[in-house]
Length: 143
Image (spheres, helix red, strand yellow):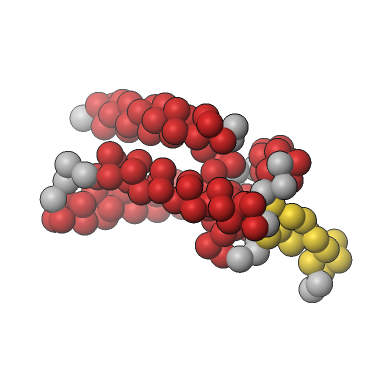
């Protein structure tokens, strides 16, 4: 049964990525960049390290994703007043406009993802996903 569940997970992940890529294409960004803008808009500010943890990505991948967002003027990077060795990232006014559009797309994706589930099934799915995620986090902590 485990391999069937894993196979279904990858099919769902692929469907989400294809749908998101299609929806985000007019903006010229990918799903990770959209998550970064959306996260920054909600949080107000963040560091590279926080964004790396949030997306579960290595710092180099975050830097590459952020470079496009910086060049487009959707985010701004400043010295962190608490630690001059770090950068503080914020969404610009242009980025806030984009973040609102991304929020609409994310809500549509979420509806596609869980729209066919009733409330009890949704809660069960979240509990199961949390359990799976906890297993991966436990393995990561051992490394």
